[in-house]
Image (cartoon, rainbow, N blue to C red; front, side, top):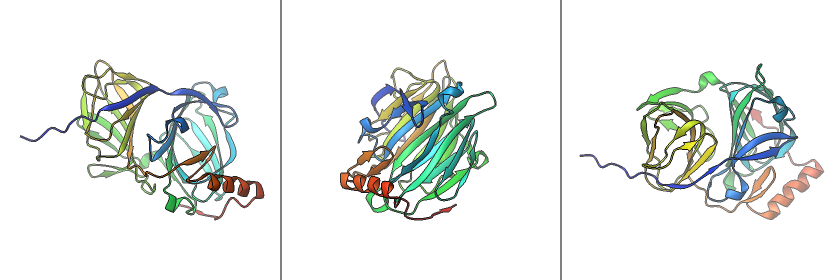
Length: 290
């Protein structure tokens, strides 16, 4: 008889917090600076969902980034964007914007919402290892039709990044090689997912509710669930369905110095970045769209 893998235990559960960012965007932060380093190699997850345009139309005007990569996943509404690589355009429902800030990039992101005035999306920040902090910036839009949808033991999964069986997500060049899945479970459905030992794993519930450990209380919408470092993920729905983002990655184990949109390894590097920004020497490479 095959051995049943032990369940990956829940380390901590909490509800995302209302936060004001950009030029006055109301969003919810699932985790960020204050949760370091427990989410290594991830830095932040923001939830920007609203049916009120006044919550998001102020947007995120031109600002710098260095030392990170971002994955923006839009489920409803449009986001206009421009950057110092000369890229620009709109990402809409089901689209993904992946950006490597690397040595430095300037960009703006301006949510426009849908025709009904709704906006729904998530932005994940992934850290860059010290050896790649100053790599050339790069950028890609991934359209919704490029995101594979598979069925796995009762679960419906959109594979944003990583691999499920033979299916590989379209976001493939993030340096830390994360797994990023959008999982939907119908009611009364158990589902399991193996995760590499030692990897950081978290789930963020975006609809319904699910239990993320055998016998655990169900976690509802806007709940962040952080897991321990060993065992397989074992999820179960009861009377209600659930939809959640499932993200995992191998920790970098490096020091983090973080101020605003700049994430480096030392305070001196942070100081240098802001000095270059003031002098107009922040952007090192012209880069290229991919």
